[in-house]
Image 1: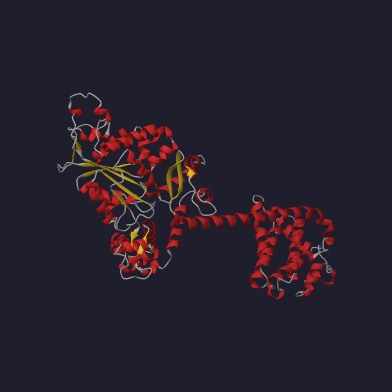
Image 2: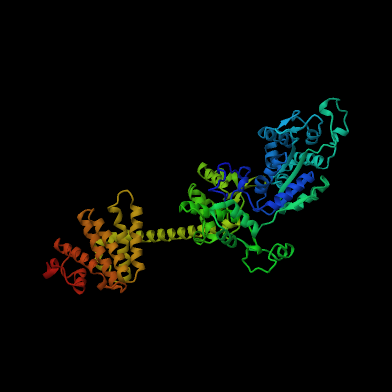
Length: 600
């Protein structure tokens, strides 16, 4: 994962969120003192050390921010290597490793007493003329750290043609850690120059292999090449409750007090398993109740995200510290919702749709998606995905011969699933509305053809009149809306839908009045004949709704006054007379308009 876009941590921002800690973050890396000390001791004692854990427990953070500073203090040169970078695109891995050693030495201002040119790693480190010295005149031990070593097996599975180069790398590592003379040296006559004089006893190097623990069976199989491969190892566990407190308190320093830190750890932690409680005497000796810090284990990624969010909230509120009131604002799961939504809001709008449809199944399982397929969808989506990779929302894996991306952590599944469900409901509503609009439009086409001569005959059934009125209200919209008829049709349909949802009272009156007002607005902008027809339809619609029994005329004085004025204007223009249905209806609901009396 590329994290170079993220700034280094600081006193005001001491937690990295979802991304791992880096070397420059070492001052804020806490909670792993025991593991760092053990890994350091094993590294100094043995030529080969294994570090493994399940995904997400912080192996990279431990190596970079925990182990690296201690190695440097003791005169070691850590060189970080990824198998994919060493073997990708047909690269020769031994040359790549040697080049990386030279680059790391140059950055650390470490001087080599001879060139880095060598055909094998064993020959480089055992050559009598070759040593590394730091500025304090200390002999430097190189530590080759292979992070995500499981990529070795992925490469061979995906590209059998890479097997010879993978075998060459493994053979070179075996020669180093077993201190075994390379076969080519024992079988050849070598020149008698300084480049071919070797110190067999030299051990100024170490090797660390870090990998996910589900690859442990494959690593064990390497014993045929490296017999000592499983003898010296460290398994990384979740944080204990006390370690989690250290992460919060020591990194936060003056930003948080003990009570608030304890609340965070209790909120994020889970009860340790029985085996951990039995084997670790420091845990729960007094039988602490569930939720007590001593009995908890904590996922470091979850803890970092919660601290990151609460600190951002503190800064936004201009508070000096994270206190209990701030912590009580949201549950940890809500924090992950916000963490995801804040990240997704900063990228192109295609990204959430892509994640919801391509990176997760309906059942909530993560999906590995080809990076090439992402790039084929255009630069906007590709840029958004790169940003989410940098922020730790997504991660990149090598699978089936290509780079693929996936959601980085199960903690992010809930907000993504909820967002996907919301999108599905919204899409379903849009489809229903579109179908309704099509149906109304179809009725309107027929109704408009019949309206002029057959208006009095389309009254046989109450429900058909209501549907006809609704269809005509929608159909008249384009007459007044030049550029956006579809959006205006939908707006009128939504107003009608709002009137249908209410059953009387002030809300019902308001919803029905909005429909009538919109019809009047349209009528004011069209020719007189169309305006007259639209007003007749609007009056008929209001009367039908009230007659349906869902709206009380007593609650609708303001709307009835508007209807009365409209009917009066129609009578005054000669379009409506005293005996018409609309006039007679008003006579029963508050009185006949003056313009319509005496048949005028």
